[in-house]
Length: 163
Image (spheres, rainbow, N blue to C red):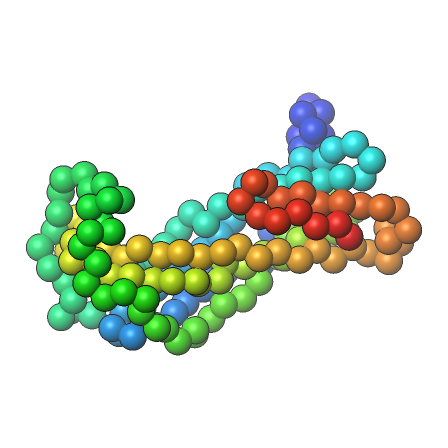
């Protein structure tokens, strides 16, 4: 019994790396996305879902504070923004690459849009940042499949496009 029986396509991870940024306040920010699944629909159509699941904040010593152990709401975080719309330098922002059995490659990466630092620290004493990013995707179809009309429809969070 394989994934195909359930309407999903198996894929290989060819490359799945961290993006790395240095924020204006000298904090390093690491982000990573993953491709969760690819589903095959009718007439050579595919849909897929990508999650921006991992963000790691590595602050300098002077920004660390008292750890917070209580749950914090998004509203509380938004009310405690200490530094809004921080600028950053991109150190590494590369495409993740996934390949289907038929040779189609899906490339995806998260791009930072906005970063705010709050006055609240996490349970490690690291400042909590509000991070907005957008996932962009591109698809490479092998020449032998280009005569077929193949469409890709990322999940709701991403725009739809046709190859």
